[in-house]
Length: 259
Image 1 (cartoon, rainbow, N blue to C red):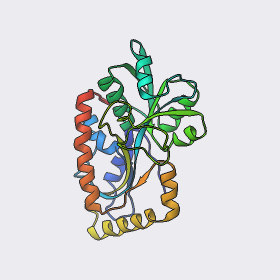
Image 2: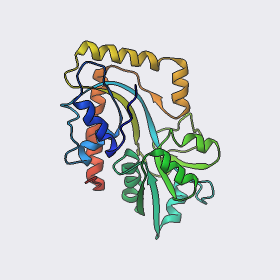
Image 3: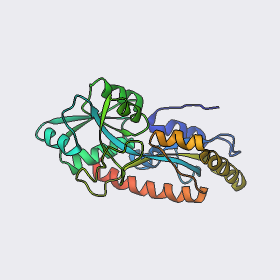
Image 4: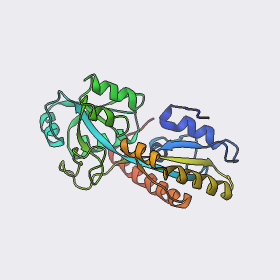
């Protein structure tokens, strides 16, 4: 059973699972947002290290900067040049999302633009606004956007990975657009309540990895721009700690707060 509890950047769902029985029957599926919220909220209602055990890292995807096909910008540098001296609005999946932090850091901090954030309630509404040409730039993770770029409704300007991706081979990286080393990736992972037994964690991790190894699953994920990330629970725990530290620095640099 999937119980989709949206809101507060995933904090509502996280709070529910933090207090669930540690029997392996209630798990949290969350994104990079859980590592961001530690710094973004003074009190998110949970402690990521005290209340959860990372179980499995299922996949990651770089961010994508896209515009309506009618936009005259043909590249990231074109966009920056055309936006100099005026206000630019950009849409994301919401305040404090990885796409918000990446968009603010690139457009405002690095490019020096007067960029206004337009938050939406998720990637679907933000993408719809871009398709309707209601906003100038879309900053979002790849999966909701890839079908619309392939279908000619949106135009990809830059990918926030260090190398181009197979799902959109013609879209250059942010590094190619003039900002070397820029990388932002969202990810999806499974978490169990604290005190869940190690044998249960190992069992769940193994099952997830077996599913990720299925050819049809890998093809589906890769077609959306998601890179499968099999590995041990310990490897995922180490990755999450690194993400918490990375996003803490970006939140500090941008000054973004959800309060």
